Structures are given as structure tokens and as C-alpha cells.
Image 1 (tube, helix red, strand yellow):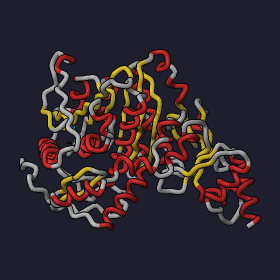
Image 2 (cartoon, rainbow, N blue to C red):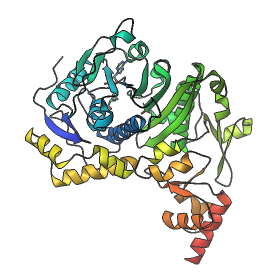
Image 3 (cartoon, protein in one colour):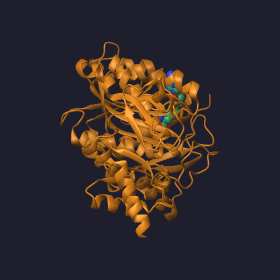
Image 4 (cartoon, helix red, strand yellow):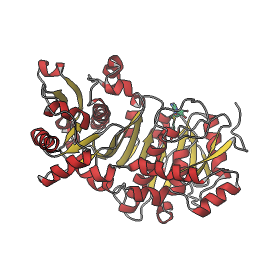
Length: 446
Ligand SMILES: C[S@@+](CC[C@H](N)C(=O)[O-])C[C@H]1O[C@@H](n2cnc3c(N)ncnc32)[C@H](O)[C@@H]1O
């Protein structure tokens, strides 16, 4: 197998981190949303950059706000399928220096080429801060085998073994396709209170556009309509929650998004037999009504199943406080490179124009756009609507601008916020009749 290049094909900056791209991989273009055109060892999928940025922000938040481990305590984080390690390198480079010494990072993959690539990149472009944790040998009967490279412990293992060998407080699961094969091991690999981030790129199965895969992998039935993206998120969350319950654990969703070509859910998981026994209280079906609205039910009739999708998670999707701190300012503060950082990277061969910098800042903002504003509604009961569905439902020729509708709803004492989706979705705590009345009066008055 070929070694990762000592001299890179060319360099790229993701967040503050210098990334080596293969010579035959084009520089990422504006707003990469779909899957990378090429894949294979060493290819960086730029469409996943926003998810990696959110991962940096969430991990920093856990360390700074102590919602996973107590102040002063270490946090062990594992990227179980790390590939070339861009995520773990970003954790080491971009999480604030004040909390770096408390962060123990392990990176695992089965692919030698990818791991060599990680080691080479991390040696050529080391983190600003030196973190030299010794491996905690005393914790394990049989310490995991691997090497320590500039503050990242690197292992080559089947992920299922890596997950079971030690107890981590933070686990990232980012496989090709479906995560189902790794979920049991990931949940068992978490410490008593932990955090799990799961990516799934098998969106056809999650939405139900591939009905047989959805049935097989997720035990669910879908309807591919306006709600397919939200259903996909809830079907994956449902699987994570029921899998956790089988291991006497309970989930609390922190962030759950459909992001173009993948679904990503981030949940706190804690051991509690009692709460785990209640998991089915959070599971149900989304039933479509003739009016165009939907409602969640726990025990659908056979007729409702016909016009329903599920079973899926029907509880809250985000944590209000944590998601509320994922602001654009925070993304720039943590992940935007300083002028000196760019100068240093350009002296090592990075080509970085003002246009690139502008593009990078836009991408960082886009990674978290609309999240903080929607955090409150997404953490409690809400109604999800697509603005383009409303004219039909209200019997009016067109919809007003979303912001105009929001102002009118707020005038009635309701909350409303746009969702981070490529399509114009919003959430509100107003009832559907209120939204439609509001729309009619706005369109008639205009
Ligand atoms: C989608 S990539 C991970 C991307 C990475 N997390 C990132 O952000 O750049 C999936 C990785 O899983 C690895 N992989 C697949 N099956 C595995 C297994 N059973 N154990 C460990 N690694 C595995 C592949 O080698 C590949 O590098």
C-alpha cells in the first residue's frame, strides 16, 4: 500500500486546520452540499466540513460548560472511524487552549493509508498547543495498542473492538452509509454519562425512499413528502434511543439535523434503567391529515398507519441551552484562522486568497446558521411547516416572506423560527389554524 505523501498534493484549510488534499482532488468549491464526487483513501469530503465544525463547537461547549464531566476532570473522546483524522485534528487545533489539557483524544480506523495520512498531516502541521498525555495504562487490563502523535492517540482496530476496549465520554460514529452495525458497541463503549454523535449517509433508507432498506435497517415505514427529512432524523434518533434502552441507557437529544446528504444526531446518553424503561413513551408515528397537517400518535390504527411514517422518536430534538450557544459568532471565534495562522500556513505552501478566506467564513457561518434561534422551539413541542405548502393549505395565491409571517405570529404571542435546512422550513408553537389565519390576513392585506 502507498504511504501518505510527506509532501502534500496540495493544502487546504478546514476551520483553522491545515488539511492535505490528494493531488487529484480539486480544491473544495463554494457551498459543497452533496457527497464528494470521488471517494477513496485520502479523499476529504468537504460536504462534511459543517458537521465537523459543529462537532468542534459542541465538544468545546461540553468542556467549558461542564455538562459531561465535572470542572477539572478529563474528557476522553474517540472518533471510532476517523479516516484521515480531520475531525480529531480539528478538535486538537480549534478547541480553546484553556480546556485542551483536559481533552484526551483517540482516533481509530482500519485503513492503514488513512491512518498514515493522519500521522503525516498531524506531524507536518502540529497543533499550536502541546498536549502530551501518557496513555492511561492503569485504567485498562490490556491497554489499547496504538501510537501517540502530538496529543492524539492513534489506533488501528475494527471500530467495534475499539469501542468496547475502553470507556469514552464522547464517541463519534461516522461510517460510510448506515451506522446500524456500530451502534450497540458505541453505546456499550460510553461511560456512565456520555455523548454520542452519529452520522448516517443512507438517507434513502432513512426517509423511506428505499422502503425495503428502511424496513430492514430501521424497522420503519416512510412517506416521501415534505416531512421526509424530519422523519429521517427522527427514525435515526428512534433507533439510537431504543438501542440505548436495550443497554439500560436513556438518551437526551442535543442536536439532530438533516444536512443535505446525511443525517447527524448528537445525544447525551446516561445509564438509568428506570428512564430507559420509558423509551416507548417517546416513540410514535407521524400521521398525515387531509388538511395537510400532521400529528404524532403513539398507537396508530391500521388506517392511520397507511398515511403514517414511523415508528420514530417523537420527543424534543435539541437541547435548548447547548444548541442555543451554537451561534455564528462562536463558530467564527473558534474556527476562523487568524491572520498569523494563515501566514504560517502559506509559508508552508498553502495558497489562500482573500476570496478563499471570504468563502471559508461564509461556510463557518453556514455550519450553524439558524440553529441558535430555533433552539428553544426545537427543544419542546412545535409544529414544523414548509412555507411553500402554506398557500395551498390556506387557499391563498402565495406565501408572504418568512420573516413577515414570523413578525405577525410574534405579534400574536407565538414563537417562530427558521430551521437549518436547504428548504424553507420553519417551526412554531402556534397552531396550524392560527398560522393559516395569519397567512390569509397578510396575503389579503398586501
Ligand atoms: C466516512 S469515513 C470517516 C470520515 C471521518 N470521520 C471524517 O470526518 O473525515 C469512514 C471510515 O470508516 C472506516 N471503516 C469502515 N469500517 C470500519 C471498521 N469496521 N472499523 C474501523 N474503521 C472502519 C473506513 O476506513 C473509513 O475511513
